Image (tube, rainbow, N blue to C red):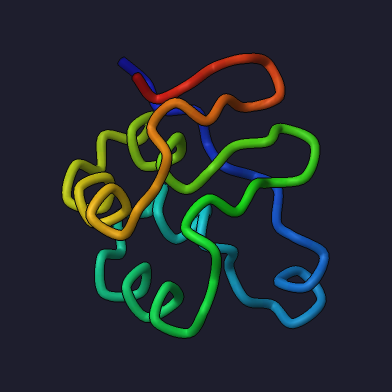
Length: 88
């Protein structure tokens, strides 16, 4: 299994050089994911174009600790990406 990289950033994060929640989730940075969620980032935010959610990125990258945190924070496991892919 090879995880697909999360390459797209939101316009806001790209403009300020910060990573989106989806990118941070794909890296497996649990503390940073928690910080972004605590700061008000939507747990089900989507990447432009792909529609990937942080949960999809975490599952695809094999980051189970992040996936668990996202689910605990209310991520919808059946929310599909633009191509219909879900993390289920």
